[in-house]
Structure formats: structure tokens, C-alpha cells
Image 1: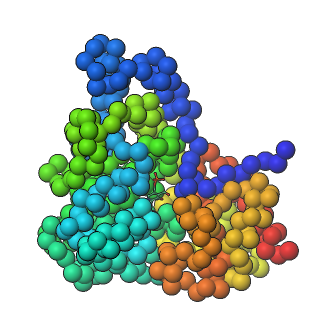
Image 2: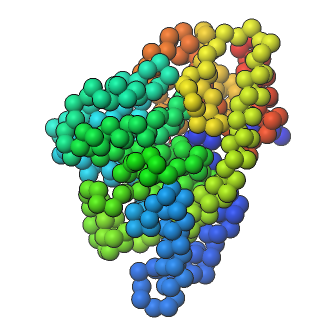
Length: 369
Ligand code: PLP
């Protein structure tokens, strides 16, 4: 059987066995509804509280600032919809979980500005300074880009937003669990995260909301999530999300060093090749390599790699039906002769050095054939 090499961890990650094991108790034994008053509901209620505390502590927040959601997309939509009457400033390279709600709200009359980025995908402080602020509005800039990996200077950008009387949100879906995050150091008012990006289950995420910041009531119903997002809690997945996050943070340095070494091994694989390529982005999130080969076709490359048992991406997973040059590559003004030959490799803690060198050898073989 062909060996599977999974190198698309920015799309989703393998669930941690520890997180997986933590779920069964809340599905098979302590399955009571956490909102019920009887003693059988005590254990799931306690588990929800403990998970909220673990997640809050991991980003320097307090437990009452954490709201559980179904995914990163929901977290992003929740914040943005809270500001659709106030004005939103965002960047041209955000994930569609931010760009598409912004487009919808724009159609409904919301004032939305899309900031340009430089050739590395950086939103410069100057660009933000020069935009038109509406007091009480929102600035939403992602922490790390899902395609090219560029990490933004969130601390500086949030302080500019605050000085102009705006709130600040960061979509940290690619960063949480992979990088140390402290909401107070960053100065953010809102932060979105998703469990399946850090070895937790799919279908669960969270939103950090600084106490006192505006928040729209997302789902009307029961009193779950302080009556802001009603609906019986997904206790097993929430518990597993907290376990996965804690596990990743306990091993953060080791995981970062490992995936960075995999990136170096992968890139070293091209040292003696005659391929003309560029690596996109700067100060990338650990494990991300977005690479563009002159004259190649990224779509073809992805399918040929797939036939060899190698999973990579051409851009964002949510964009897999779109064979156009991605909005991110357009925003960094990458020359189309390179842009069309782009793939994203995103290494995770499960990958080996053999995976990294096998992928570069496979690419060289395909492009030279
Ligand atoms: N934001 C970013 C930066 C992402 O990379 C993704 C997923 O790829 C999302 C939001 C959406 O997250 P989810 O899949 O949990 O809805």
C-alpha cells in the first residue's frame, strides 16, 4: 500500500489520541444535559467550567470571556455581525470566514474597508493609520494568514485601532495552539479559534470577548453561553478541545522546533535542483511553506502529488473548487507566472523528516518530467 504523507495541517489536523479519549466519558457515561439541576448533570457542568478555565488561561483571559462556538467561521461571523451597523476595517487577505460576511454586510449598507498588504502579506501600521475610522467600529486583522503564513504585528495594529476609538478582532484560527498567545499583550478585544486546527475535534471552536466589548446575541433560546449563544453544549467536543490545546501548549517549543526543522529539510531538498521558485510570505507561522514554481501549474502538481499519496493544498481548503489565483496571491501582487504554480505545504507535529524530503523529491520529479 502507498504510504500516506499528510502535509495539509493548515486545512485540518489529526486529532490527538488524548483528546479523543477524553470525549468518551461525556458521550457514554456522563452524558447528562449540563443545564439540568440534578446531580447527574454535575459532571458535564463541571467539565464545561474546567474546559473554559483551561482555554481562558491558555490565552491570558478570564473564563467569562470565553464563548464556545461550532467553528472558527462562526466565531468570525459572530464578531463581525456585532459591528455591521458600526463600520468594519479589515484586510484584503483575510479568510473567507471574514471576507464573505463583510461583503454581505457591505451589501446591506455597512461601511467596509479592505486594507492592502505589502508583497509579503503584511498589513503595515501606516496602511491602517491612513484608513478612515468610525468611532465604535471594528478593525479585524488575522493573526496568521492561512495560505502564506505571514504573522501580523497585532500588538501595534490593535493599539492604532484603540487610539482611533475602535475595537480590535483577530482571526487567530491558524495560530492558537501553535504559538504563544496572550490577549492582553496583543491588546485584542476579540479572538477567534477553531479546535480542528490544533488537534482537537471538528465542529467546535471558541471566541474570546474582552469584558465590556459589544456582542450581538447570536442564537436566541436557552441561557447557555450567558444567553448569547443558546443551544445544548457539545460537552465532549469542548472537553477534547481543551485537552488538545493544553497538550499542544505543554509541548509548544518542541513542536515549533520540529516543524521548523521539517520546513528547512523540505527547502534544502531543492538546493541542487534547477527549479525556479519563490517562497511566499514572511515571518511565517511554524510549519507553513507556500511555494510558487515558475511556469508550473499548482492544480496539476497537487493532483500528481495526490497520486503519489501526498496531501498538500493549492491555497485555502475552503477554496478547493476555485482554480483561480487566490485573493491572497493577488493581494501580494505575485507575478502570475509564479502564482499559477503555487502549492501550500503545512507540516504538523505528526510529520517526519522522511515526509519532508519525500515531498521535495516528489515535486522535483514531477516538475522535471
Ligand atoms: N480563519 C482562518 C484563518 C482559517 O484558516 C480557517 C479555516 O481554514 C477559518 C477561519 C475557518 O475555520 P473553521 O474551519 O473552523 O470554520
